Image (cartoon, rainbow, N blue to C red; front, side, top):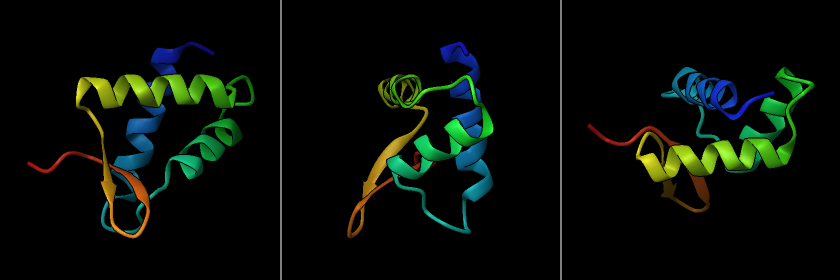
Length: 72
Protein backbone atom coordinates (compact mmCIF):
# COMPACT_ATOMS: atom_id res chain seq x y z
CA UNK A 1 0.00 0.00 0.00
CA UNK A 2 1.42 3.36 -0.96
CA UNK A 3 1.96 6.28 1.42
CA UNK A 4 -0.33 8.68 -0.49
CA UNK A 5 -3.41 6.49 -0.06
CA UNK A 6 -2.58 5.96 3.62
CA UNK A 7 -2.29 9.75 4.06
CA UNK A 8 -5.75 10.23 2.52
CA UNK A 9 -7.19 7.60 4.85
CA UNK A 10 -5.59 9.20 7.91
CA UNK A 11 -6.99 12.64 7.03
CA UNK A 12 -10.45 11.13 6.42
CA UNK A 13 -10.25 9.29 9.75
CA UNK A 14 -9.31 12.47 11.65
CA UNK A 15 -12.02 14.53 9.91
CA UNK A 16 -14.60 11.84 10.71
CA UNK A 17 -13.69 11.83 14.41
CA UNK A 18 -13.66 15.63 14.81
CA UNK A 19 -16.06 16.72 17.53
CA UNK A 20 -16.65 13.13 18.63
CA UNK A 21 -13.39 11.70 19.89
CA UNK A 22 -9.76 12.75 19.90
CA UNK A 23 -7.49 10.10 18.41
CA UNK A 24 -4.06 9.26 19.73
CA UNK A 25 -1.36 8.41 17.17
CA UNK A 26 -1.49 4.74 18.23
CA UNK A 27 -5.25 4.68 17.60
CA UNK A 28 -4.65 6.02 14.10
CA UNK A 29 -2.01 3.38 13.35
CA UNK A 30 -4.24 0.55 14.58
CA UNK A 31 -7.24 1.78 12.60
CA UNK A 32 -5.24 2.14 9.36
CA UNK A 33 -3.84 -1.39 9.70
CA UNK A 34 -7.40 -2.67 10.37
CA UNK A 35 -8.87 -0.87 7.36
CA UNK A 36 -6.07 -1.79 4.96
CA UNK A 37 -4.52 -5.21 5.52
CA UNK A 38 -1.63 -4.28 3.18
CA UNK A 39 -0.66 -1.32 5.37
CA UNK A 40 1.89 -1.66 8.13
CA UNK A 41 2.38 0.36 11.29
CA UNK A 42 5.65 1.71 9.83
CA UNK A 43 3.86 2.90 6.67
CA UNK A 44 1.18 4.57 8.79
CA UNK A 45 3.85 6.26 10.94
CA UNK A 46 5.65 7.56 7.85
CA UNK A 47 2.39 8.87 6.38
CA UNK A 48 1.44 10.60 9.65
CA UNK A 49 4.92 12.14 9.89
CA UNK A 50 4.55 13.57 6.36
CA UNK A 51 1.12 15.00 7.21
CA UNK A 52 2.54 16.62 10.35
CA UNK A 53 5.52 18.07 8.46
CA UNK A 54 3.20 19.51 5.80
CA UNK A 55 0.95 21.10 8.44
CA UNK A 56 -2.11 19.12 7.34
CA UNK A 57 -2.41 17.65 10.84
CA UNK A 58 -1.06 18.77 14.20
CA UNK A 59 -0.40 17.22 17.59
CA UNK A 60 -2.32 18.56 20.56
CA UNK A 61 -1.26 17.92 24.14
CA UNK A 62 -4.17 17.76 26.57
CA UNK A 63 -3.34 15.10 29.12
CA UNK A 64 -1.79 13.07 26.31
CA UNK A 65 -0.81 13.42 22.66
CA UNK A 66 -3.62 13.59 20.13
CA UNK A 67 -3.77 14.04 16.37
CA UNK A 68 -6.05 16.82 15.13
CA UNK A 69 -6.74 19.11 12.23
CA UNK A 70 -4.99 22.46 12.72
CA UNK A 71 -7.12 25.31 14.12
CA UNK A 72 -8.50 27.67 11.51
